[in-house]
Image 1 (cartoon, rainbow, N blue to C red):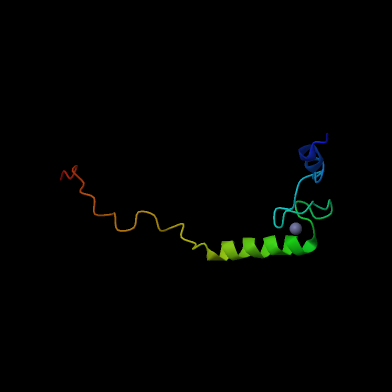
Image 2 (image 1 turned 90 degrees about the vertical axis):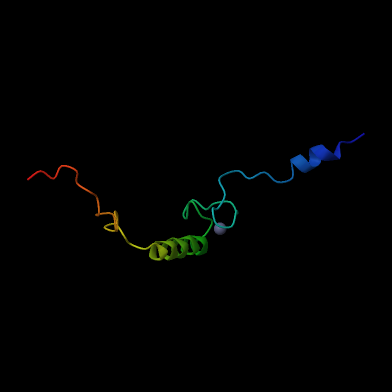
Length: 74
Ligand SMILES: [Zn+2]
């Protein structure tokens, strides 16, 4: 009597971390990717995301300078 379930458990076992882009085993030369192609994909994603972020650091407190100063003693 054989247990087919056990055989399938031995089928595929990744020996290391997987590429964050496509899920293939990583290449040590391109970690955390499997290839230069995936590294390029990640880089372009990162750049696109960066350029998509509007740069507004000095935009805080917009239209909020109508505070009433209650210490207006003359
Ligand atoms: Zn990959």
